[in-house]
Length: 560
Image (cartoon, rainbow, N blue to C red; front, side, top):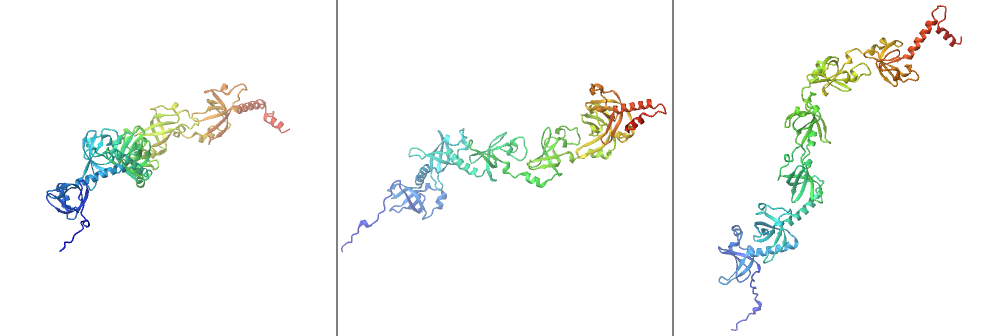
């Protein structure tokens, strides 16, 4: 029988694996020595079991596909020696080279400090192999400063590959380049948020008296002192803690400093909105004294809301000149709201209006018209202040000192400590004011002026003042008359001050009275004319048969 011959060229023989070749295979079995793969060759491939973790071994099952590198051929066992770690390492090297070309970030863990920098083990997600790389000390951070090793070692970070490396040299990576790239990206993102209600989270890295510096993903933000909190504070540390995170609203960007200007308080609810809904003028609220000044005291009535008590609203007593006489920082007080100015963010408060008002009690006991006695405490050119006891002080205005229209300077009439009697005219208990009068102790002389100084009567007095337009003549303690210049009978070559002087006795006739304007007009000229007339009549009218001078002049004027 003739034997059939086969063409060997028709039989496809798998090519033998080459050292360093990456191939894929399906798991056939797992033993204590290794994991066996079907690599589509006459011999099976084997990966040492030491290259797998217990969890990985448990997850393997027949048919699971794995990648591995050919390390050689074991003639004794006939197996192809494989390594999954070397395959992953080779893949990682290719990825690092690709990242160096494209600028794509890579991840790694800083493991130890070495000469000139740090050793980093680069890794890829889903790959157990790690590739050593060098991180220069100058590339750890953007800031040129001494880096604390404890803040670097053991940390998982992202880097930019500066040099891909070679068989003899490790890849060189930079953390600073990665941070710089992220900062540029975040700056552009943050710029989109400026002017909006959106906020960013930032960590405090420095506290100064004038404000705080924060950082968010490498981007620096500065917040001025006045933008830290709605409430009033003395020290920045009272409202801000170092290292803490705060929401920040972005307001502006400084291109030169590459720094944002932000606000922490604007990132928080405005307490004024809620306060103005909750409280109104006249409400009484509780608060805490947060500060004292020369002109008043600041009181926090709600978180972030402060009002001011003016020194005049601290007590009903006028003897209080300094807030420290009544309050101290930290005191708890009840205050009355006098005024709310939401736009100006100001609240005016009163402490005294929550207390019993002694001025009301005084006015109950001493209603208008009551005579009271007191001692002068202070005198000005327009007022006299009188101590009425129990921290009550009355005011006598200059016009209430005398019925005389021309009242002398009160400083000339009254001295501090002088005891005087007054009449209560009116009171303003809410304003802690009582007005007194001294002239009201006597009847208004102008009511009977026509009886005392009738028109046509001759009066005597003393010059009290000389003016260009006339001479004032004191008729009694309360009343003056005015002698107008034309009525003074001045010699042609004389000035009014040459003829009249203070204290000089004057006799004149009353020519006009105006009680409403409290004015009496005098005349020396008319007095002299009257006397001359009377003298002529006396001379010419001594005999009964002779006509009187007036009759003669009257007859002539009538054309008789």
